[in-house]
Length: 61
Image (tube, rainbow, N blue to C red; front, top):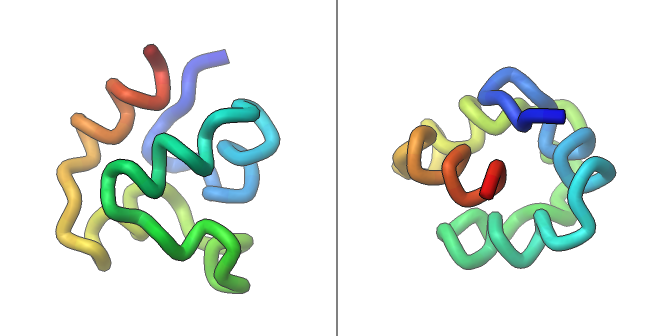
């Protein structure tokens, strides 16, 4: 299953066992934050000034 920008962070964490490490390596350190349960990857990337395309490439590797 491909990870997309509209997936909730919670879904990504359930989909990939190494997702937390990838997200944190790209600057998204709040993977355990309560808002991550309801926030999409695209929303999180925007809030943290991250490039969503780079993040998706890493998560879909």
